[in-house]
Length: 92
Picture 1 (cartoon, rainbow, N blue to C red):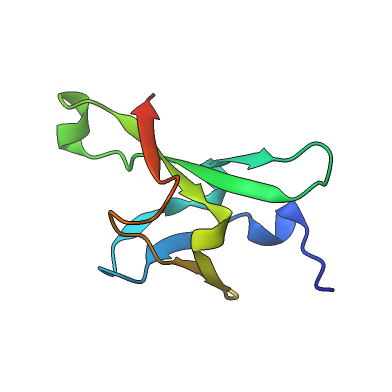
Picture 2 (picture 1 turned 90 degrees about the vertical axis):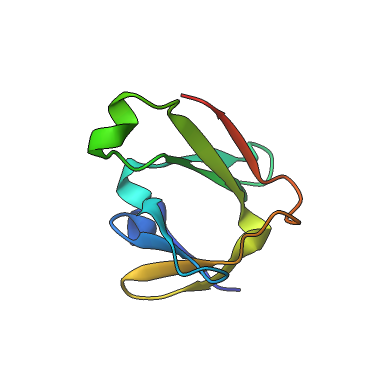
């Protein structure tokens, strides 16, 4: 059984394997954790801030934990496309 602390994830950048897009940093993210099992269910990333985001609809991205493919020393690789179940966006 591999053990991972929340602090081990902090500061890692999330990268999408499908298109190579940088999705955000875990230090800026929230997580949904099952209170009964302690397992991570999803990562909630805020949309990256840009000059143009001041005039656009800011949404958060909910990444299901099943989409996480690899956790490295500096990045977390996720596999996200439109077919991923539970991939959602909600207004920030």
